[in-house]
Amino acid sequence: MVTADTRHVTKTNLYYVINYVVIIL
Image (cartoon, rainbow, N blue to C red; front, side, top):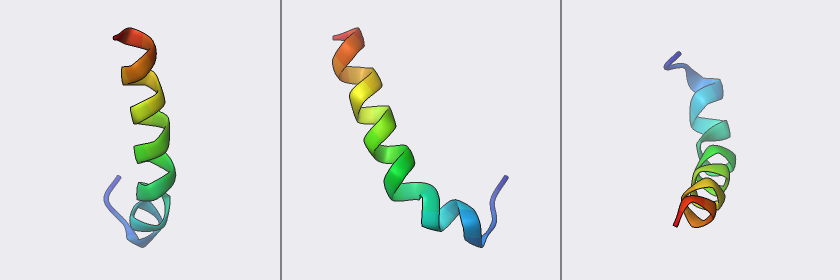
């Protein structure tokens, strides 16, 4: 889903992704 809401949640998603990557590593 690529909408205006996605841009607003991009920062939050990035934080979650980083946390996930750190856990995997």
